[in-house]
Image: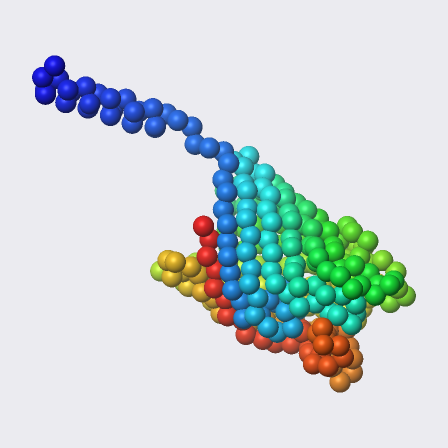
Length: 264
């Protein structure tokens, strides 16, 4: 066999392998991960870390049909005096289904479980673990979402007379606008209703800017609420630390948040 024949065979084999690769169907499964650092873990306008930094990260699975599931965690500093425990970690487990309709419209429905592994709970106090069902409708860069508590209590809150807070809800409108060249604007407004507990119910808003640096995304945002947190009056969102009754803070006050995140 001469060199010309060998060259022709190699070329034919390359074309055949390329054709097979093109014909091979893409996998309907995808897996992604994310890690992040924030100067303050603020969720629904309330600091979950007593205004301190947090490390965060998670993993997501998505199917081409629209089904998805994931797990996400963050370091936190929980309310030791109210729940009587040490809660250094929030672990969220979720799953749902999303799709699109009418071109620019989308929808998303699912269930999210907030879990707070901890110890030292005072006898008779309510666990913070919470399960919510949610539904969202989106149009281009706007998303309207409602989350409804289906567990017996919402993150440890009780009604004014000590009853269950099942049925609490959070309504929010979110905006993510692409400015081009890696820049983006984010906006948020929401209202948290804690069933049967007017003092714990409040509204929040957030405005921020992001920049994709290639190796990650950096963000700066400002968040504020009308939550009652005056520590001089001992209100609902005046929270303490594991040090006991010292160092209480208004965890719903306005604050700037610096963040860095990376997806892989």
